[in-house]
Length: 201
Image 1 (cartoon, rainbow, N blue to C red):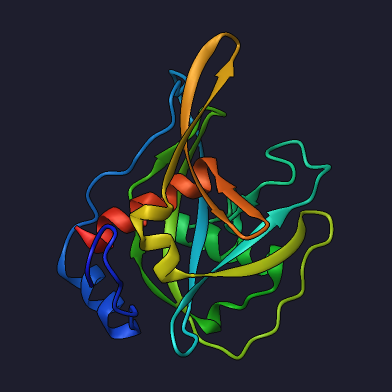
Image 2: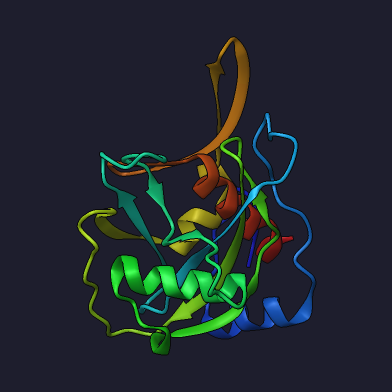
């Protein structure tokens, strides 16, 4: 696969498997202003759907009434619960609860580095290949919609933007990847940058 602004070769399932099998994951971008002290463990699934002619990444948009990150684009996932044996189990359980994507459709590839957020979470991104066909049933309380974005779009650094915002008088920077009517930003965009760094370095 070529990098930066050049034309991408379409990522294949075999290429993705080889990348995860061949190298350690390395580092991850982090948000500004990470709080000191213990962080809340959480995990998300980064679902790469094996469509033809090219894979996509399945994302969700959170409902507007949620306390944390209302209306934002996210991966399926959530806090690690006491019964979860690992972050991988958390990601798979939350994915089933939020969008009814069953683990039998998911081939686990590995985990990206933990992503720490200004809101006090330490998130483990779990990457998996998803084999269609499948049907989703969204949890109407948490998920407003599910949609897919071409993986090649998300891996192209021309689509990785840096934005800033003032938070209580302090300038904070974050990544964003606008796609059509969707504004992918914050932790979700940061984890996608981490995926790019891993796959394309």
